[in-house]
Image (cartoon, rainbow, N blue to C red; front, side, top):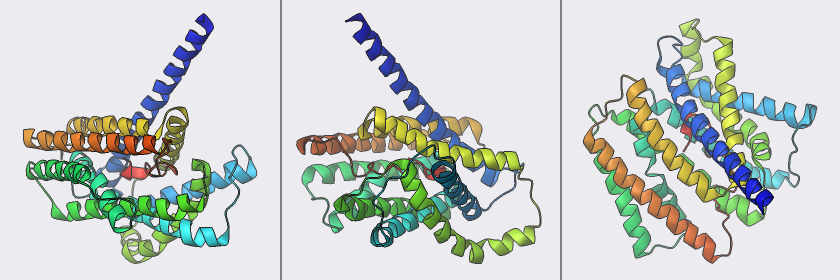
Amino acid sequence: MADRSRAFCKEEVVTYAYLLLYIALSSGQIFFNKWVLSSKEINFPYPLGLTLLHMVFSSVLCFMLTKIFKIMKVEEGMTAEIYATSVVPIGSMFAMTLWLGNTAYLYISVAFAQMLKAIMPVAVFVLGVAAGLEIMNCRMLLIMSVISFGVLVASYGEIDINWVGVVYQMGGVVGEALRLIFMEILVKRKGLKLNPISVMYYVSPCSALCLFFPWIFLERTKMEAHGSWNFPPLVLLLNCLCTFALNLSVFLVITHTSALTIRVAGVVKDWVVVLLSALLFADTKLTLINLFGYGIAIAGVAAYNNQKLKKEASRGSVSDPEQSVPLATSSASSK
């Protein structure tokens, strides 16, 4: 009995350690990217280029870990048809999410960007209804209304609102919602289940390619005209490694807990990011209206998570399609 109790306590400690690792990596990556993109020390205001570097690094590292050193295994079952109809749409939406989400940090504060991200369940639900994956009912309509109202109040309380940044952030939210819908339609229904390393192995090169072409037309000329910038190789390596480690931390949390746990951890992370950003960045000025509106939105998100849990429990499973292929927490667009 004592041995069982000690084993349970040890498992609990490990679980909380993974949760803290996820919160630390996710929050840290957001601040890291904001610093790289907007600080005078680095002077690298190229979100598309930064995201492209992340995806190229992820592609190379996944290949080395799975094919050269063979430390990790890539799941079998991928075909050309599945890649074309599943990986390409998901990879393109993932690239869009990261690109637009990172670009938003050039115009709005980290805290306000996190507040706008709270609208994500609304976007996912509306697109899910349009795709026939969700059913509109009074309870969900009320929850969506609460979240939307909270985000509107938080936006109203923003002192220096920049609508260009808001448009970029909302574009990133739509891209992420579309990615989740594609995962539901194109991956889950095909019965293909991939671990995070497999997902990164297949999706990262596709996302890199999707980012490469717009980078040529939108940022390449600016970067060449800039000449040189102070981007130390060590900082670049650490930034890319943090992105990769963040994806793996999601895998560790999900395998040791559940999809709902990482959602709850994501809510905690969002509050950590909002409050810490007010201390770390000069462009963050929180008001009581900001915090009140965000609190309302988070309450709606909590109700949404609870509703999803009940829905999954009624199916006899706690496997959430939004987390079955955990790619939602990469780069600066982490949830």
